[in-house]
Image 1 (tube, helix red, strand yellow):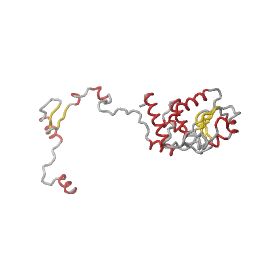
Image 2 (tube, rainbow, N blue to C red; image 1 turned 180 degrees about the vertical axis):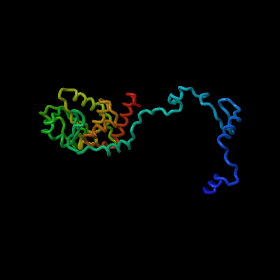
Image 3 (cartoon, helix red, strand yellow; image 1 turned 180 degrees about the horizontal axis):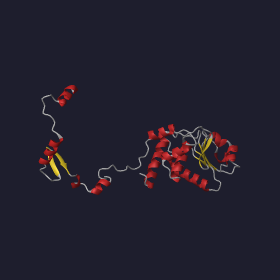
Image 4 (spheres, rainbow, N blue to C red; image 1 turned 30 degrees about the vertical axis):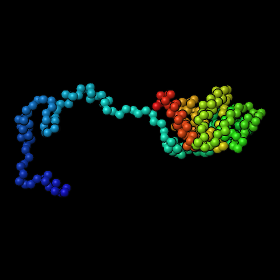
Length: 248
């Protein structure tokens, strides 16, 4: 089919030869019948002067009609947050890491290491896994040490509502960091889910971070992995703060 088309375009030997340039110019001068800005040269095909419909400044201005509007901030999906947690990994996972100035995230071992806490100058402890069958420390465990204790009997369960503690714990951390030489340890059993969720909530509430920004900040210093239920609760907080701060 392609070869047949090309042969037709090439023409045959008996076809009329192409006109010369002079003949074409004469034809154009003779056919100059209209001086209007728009002429129909073929059914429904027009040639015209663009200046009839456009102003000179329109050619310099970007088009705004029909242009896509800048979409507002789109909250991250659960799947994208889980991917972020998997991709952004700190180099090592220690018992305790400073993830924000004077704010430490750690596990049960760090919480029970009194000498380490004294060495780090910890003044406040938040235990997100308090209780007899979990990390059973409490205020009595730290008796004689110059620190304040805040315990939450939370389960590392997607159905546990940790969000009710977001604001109270954030206020506790904020007050601790505002005190002279205040240094805070937030921990649970492993220091990756319950305690990490509370630290993320603090950064979002008091440091004006989005959920993604808070994750990136903490993940730069410690591997964390809040369970899916906690991530959904943080999403709700992210959306609410976004509306209040005009991000959404």
